Length: 407
Image (cartoon, rainbow, N blue to C red; front, top):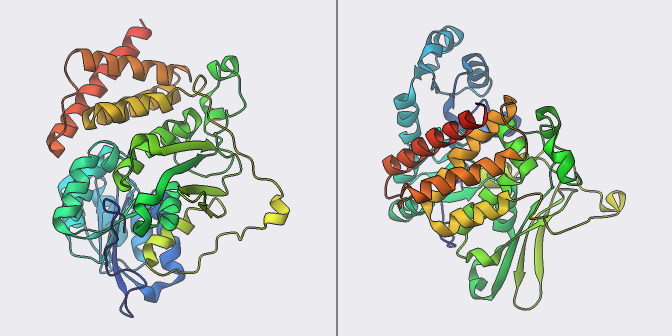
């Protein structure tokens, strides 16, 4: 596993002949859907305990029925009756509300896939960590907003943390724990998004529709915009710092438009180990579900001869300042990272709502962080409550900045 760089044993999909008891938080999102696709292909390998979703009760019910889940929870309490009706007669129990999601996360299972999008995933995922559960982690806020707290809880409980994100999972696969002192750096690759070759003038007038058209991956709206700004890669630098025991200056980013090489680790003998694969999230998800073994997926097999060329380039710090902002927040501490995440979420929504230009996303986030730093609102995060308090302040300041630009 990744837990401050140490491997630990845990029951996973490759650990015994008994089905893996699995819960999925965020079952109706893209990661959740890919996870359940894998489960449906090998139903005897998994015993689904609980599925959760935010508001989409119909999709949640359909997923729960498909994989024969024991329990389903929708975070939006107003969607409870819809969920209850859809599951009537199936034998699947259901509940609603944030407290029910947290309770579901605390139920004993062999593995929990943490795929809730946003800060809402922090509390339930941490509850599972404190139970010592093996976590297939796809919620970046857990590490971006409260990385020290999260990893400390994992150490205390003995929880296993397996990275689902394609880049971190790639690094995990080639990260030689026994040669930690011989690792010089790791590299996270970035596609460059839809605006990789755009000029600043072209980016300034870019529309939400253009920003959502990722060249390689099919993702949700926020992560698609974060890919276009490269803020997602900034968040991944912060995540990598918590997942792997390396300094910030040992974590590099390289633009790789083909999205075939997902991560690399360089060693003192000059060797660079890389993980390659088609851009399909079912590959890293399956790696976590079956770890420390492997399981078959329908992912496209690489044909390197057909690909012919793989290219790499350094990210442009002028057109993509989000990387600089993320490194600065990471250096400042957990509160700054939490504020960065909250401000980004607000700015992405403002851009999608056409209240903010594309380049204004990073520019406005920088102003928010400067205001919060000047007012002393970036003190260290020592609890979930403090992380959420920083999140709340950052959202308020972000909305004030947007309102100021529209008046």
